[in-house]
Length: 222
Image (cartoon, rainbow, N blue to C red; front, side):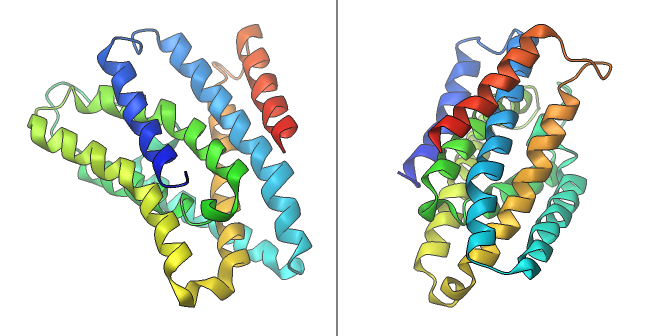
């Protein structure tokens, strides 16, 4: 499941674009806000308690390292992980964004083979990102083959990270550190999504409801 579901999330996101469900920017923003809330709630209610139960206070530095890693990745991808994907019809494929998104997807897949709740949070998070990415890629001047190849590659990154972490022996002793690192990544992304989903620093009623639903649903599933 940890290999199939993240891949399917990207495929479903792409299909939703092709059948025209990304025309409403308001709905996309609401879906993005829901995914951010769900990811934040999962990180706080599931990942952080487990991390501090099995490690001492020094594990906090791994969480901080995860935040730093995500800041670096966002400088590469220009914030594509939380919905900042803007490509004009005359643009060529932005390789920096491709690299940043792929590295992010790879890293976030590392701990999910041991964390079913994080798996679902990442699946929910990847859906609107895949929709925005697909819509943006189909505005570029790149070939159809290259667009499809990138989408498939992006879809495979999270399962690849999970597979390598589960099968690489020298990584096993560092499982809790890896989880803490990813928790820092997800904390940064989820809070950024929520803050940026507020237009003019204000939340409208629909976004408040969606965010509360995402926070509550993830907490109930814990």
